[in-house]
Length: 311
Image 1 (spheres, one colour):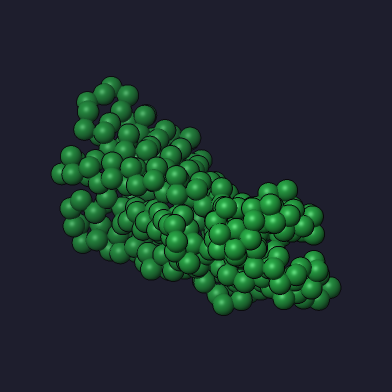
Image 2: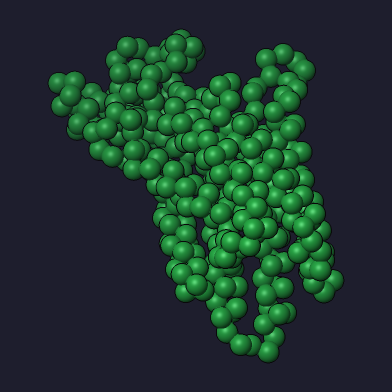
């Protein structure tokens, strides 16, 4: 059974690296702060998964200091959990609806998501202190385990709800779809913690070591990789960073119809030669239009141009 568990964690660990690569590619194209935070979440997941893999491996060995080493690993995982939910709080702040008036907008979903994440952080902090004090005698108590799982489930449900709400609209559209996909994933897998507690209560073998929450990590990685593939797939309209230039941006920047058309082609990843061939104009004319676009938008690169037009 231990070999099977190690195999599963090796799979999770491998897909974690692919998830990191996918988010890195997405950030190269979209240059978004929220993507950098998701990338940090991915790294924290990956480190925690590696520690759990080491923990399982050590359990299969006979070492004189095994108990102390295992306690150290658990403390480190709980510390990573605190950092993870701190990053999730930052993500919640970025996707909160913008205030339209002078007073900051109070959003009940944002506040609830903050409270849920803070609850998980408190539970993990207690576990860290207990581990540093010499062990986790309370960790096997049914009341503690159930409370921990309930708070974690509530935190993930609220985090997911904060990402999928209609009023949350990070730009561009491809990023908005990715954020909402993460939100749906969090909602779908949120009950996994309570299910795992239930399986443990029923003494179903193997479930205690193979946490169902880790399948959430696997699904998260698949979402990241799918988004990266759609974004970089050549000739696919879904890879466009910019579906249309907002009317208010056209007016505020004073863009001509040709410049708008040029911006949409740039967003599709077309080169200057490809744009020239598509519009039956010379590459020199394309460079002139792009220069004017950069000047009007105050951009120095294609990525900055798209970000300016979508912000």
